[in-house]
Image 1: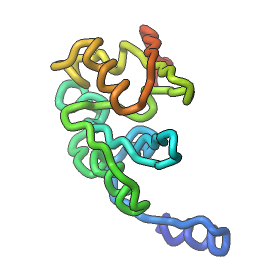
Image 2 (image 1 turned 90 degrees about the horizontal axis):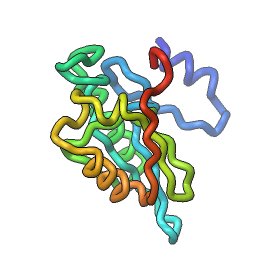
Image 3 (image 1 turned 60 degrees about the vertical axis):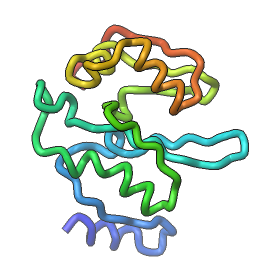
Image 4 (image 1 turned 180 degrees about the vertical axis):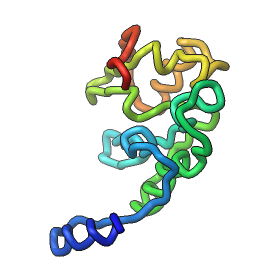
Length: 146
């Protein structure tokens, strides 16, 4: 299978290969967002994942294994974890420059099928709390068909 093929190709490379069960998604969107503090300590943010919309326009069901990918990676890496209960975000929907600025889209984070219970200001507060950012730049839309 794929795992055995990858293992054979990476043998002796120093790269550790792990197998994690998923439903469908890319690790870019389901994996943790790693953050560091001023002392260099690394932690992972485990965002909620609902297959790009859950039962309101999401791409597939079930997605429960995809929602567990970040926590499994953090467990394997023995990395402290911040879970954002009730907050949905795909890792590919944000870009952070490491200097306090985050770029995202209204199309994604303000979509009713991600965090309908939160206002723009409340979403920004969650992002500030978990990513230590100062500025959020909102673009209206993302890439076509992404």
